[in-house]
Image (tube, rainbow, N blue to C red; front, top):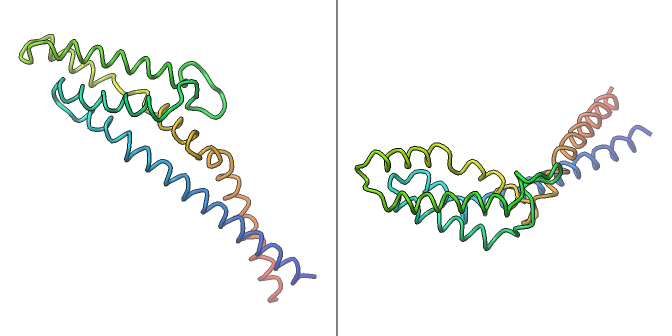
Length: 171
């Protein structure tokens, strides 16, 4: 009887561990795709020190987001709000582009330009998490949000329980 329990628990534990590992790898690949193909332009815009450079990178970022994400989607699996809706965050990003275009026309030596650049750097891109979560949900990462924790916990419990049954069997 103990042999059957041990075998079943060990097989279930290993299967759940492998299942969790697969979900983790799929989630990591999905996230990396966003960071590599889209979010790298946002990071470049944050690092850029002139309005021209920021505008170029941010415009590319906006174009890629508009092409890759469905506007009616959310950056949340549950608890969807206007603050995590993709189209409304794209509208916010558009206002940043407008402000950058205005700053681009200013004299870089002027106080107004310096203040505009400071404000844009200080407050811009706070909504990038919405876009990355929406990307994950649209590109196969939704299951990771729901199942990875459950599978990891259940798999670990089964492995520990199976190990305890195995130790009991050895005694």
